[in-house]
Image (cartoon, rainbow, N blue to C red; front, side, top):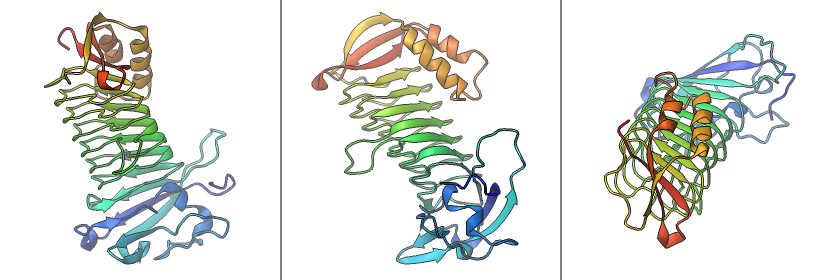
Length: 311
């Protein structure tokens, strides 16, 4: 946990050019690994030590079998966060600069604070996170938000396969929190999703919500084939339709539900439809929808909505 009496710092990590082409693992780079207790006064040292009362790993990156100290890979700067009138305890803030597209596991398991990637992020960004806010201003690799249980992950660009999904061999994917993607996503987004919300402003590839257990997914673009295949419960809202609906879904007919209105307004308040016109959530809620129930091979308790009229 972050010490509420500590000076709130914001950290700027700029990756060295020589490491931008190497596959690095950076699971220890998350906000709670950086506290005022871990760094002596003055300029940041080339490597950090975990504070005595902390069980967090030292911030480091892994290259093959080598564990690299942070100073070997990035340039570190820190600044105090300006005082806020809020009574909430200070939270650490990390800003990653440079090319992090080959770095895996950024922010994995983070529980608090704010992490901003000013560019692209590699695979597994925000995976297993349970709190805090992680923002990627560029694109993200595969398994973004995989297994997360809380917090907010916002990707301004595209995301790879298995976004908000499950790790290979896991029995569930995302189980809470919010994932917002400004572009498109790859295959199997939301696979084995149990709770939480995923909003995709672009297109979605095949097998969206595959084996979904619960939760909600909204896609504003076109969806690839077989969305919701194997789903048990949950809600899929596909604003531009799909290339191929699973044959094990049953059409219920034209449908409108106040629950959709509540869901969409809640998403709008959280910035899920950033860049869309004002009142977009209400416009989306008022559209005509056709409801399908499925997957009948798994009791058919999931719901999938396709547009009855053009967006």
